[in-house]
Length: 365
Ligand SMILES: *Cc1c(COP(=O)(O)O)cnc(C)c1O
Image: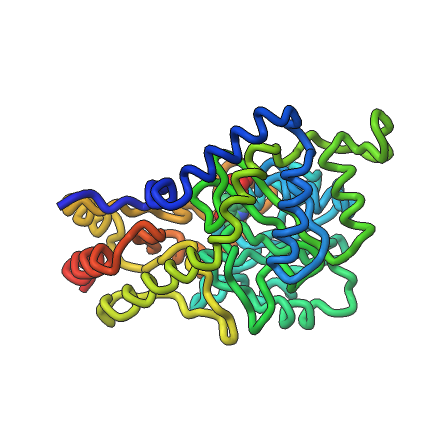
C-alpha cells in the first residue's frame, strides 16, 4: 500500500514537465519578467477558452476578487453579500476593498448560496453579491440575477474552484458581471506559485481592473485611482500557457474519478447535489458525515489523506465576527462541521478511488 494524497502534481511533471521547464527558461532568458508577452498571451487565450470577454492576470485569486471590487468603485460604506462556507479569501477580499461582508445562508442540498437568502440580505447599502462556485458546483447565477433584478447590483463570481465548470453551455465565470479565478497550485488550473485572473465582458471595467493591478496607473507613473501592485508574473503565465491546452482533459479526468466515487460510495454516504443544468468541475469531491474526525483518522491509518474545505464558517471567525455580529446561519454551520474532502486529482487511478471508497463505506454507516 502507498499513500493516496489530496494533492500531487507528479503526474503532470511526467506528462509535461519538460515543456514547463522550457517555458521558465524562455522567460528567464528573454529578460521580460513582468507584464510581457506570456501574460498577454495567457489573458487572451484563457478568456477565449472561457468563451470570451476581457481577461486580466493578477497575483492571486484573493487579489482577483479585491481588484474587481475596487475597479467597480466598491468600498467604504458598501455591503457585499457572500456565503460563510468558502475560503477565508472571499471575505478577506471584500474587507480589503474597504467594504463590509454580509453573510447569507446556503442551500443545504447543494451547499451553495441560497438565492432567496441572498435576496433577503439586500439592504440600501448593498452594492455587490459574490456567489462562490464551491468545489466546482455552480451557483445558478441567472436565477440569482433575476432574484436581484432592478437593484443594479454587481455580481462577481468566485471561480477559484470552478475552472471547467459550466451551467448549460456557459462556463462558470461568464454568468455574472465579472469573475475571479485562482491559479493556486492545487486548483483545477494551477500555477507553480500564486496567480489569479479577472474576467469581464465590460471593456471599461477591464480597463479599470488593469489600472488597479498596477498602482492605479492610466499611463506610466500617473495614477488616476488608488491601486495595488498585483500582477500575474511572466514565469507563472508561461507555465499556465503550457498547461492551458491540457486543462479540459484534466478536468474530464477529475469527472471520471468523481463518477467512480459516485458509483462506489454507499447510499449512507451523504453528498451535495449538483445544481440542475450544471456540469460540475470537480475541484473537490466532498462527502458529509457524522464524526468527521473519526472518519479522517481511520482513513489516515489506511494511508489515505483527507482535508476539510472549510472547517470554520467565516462569520464565526474572530477576524470577521464584528462584521457578522450574532448572525446565525444554520445550514452553513452544519455543513462546515460535517464535510470531508476525499482525494481527487488527475494523478489518481480508478483503483485508488475504489480503495478510498471502500474505506469510507466501512466507517460511514
Ligand atoms: C483558493 C480560493 C480563493 C483564493 O485564491 P488564492 O489564489 O489562494 O488567493 C478564493 N476563493 C475560493 C473559493 C478559493 O477556493
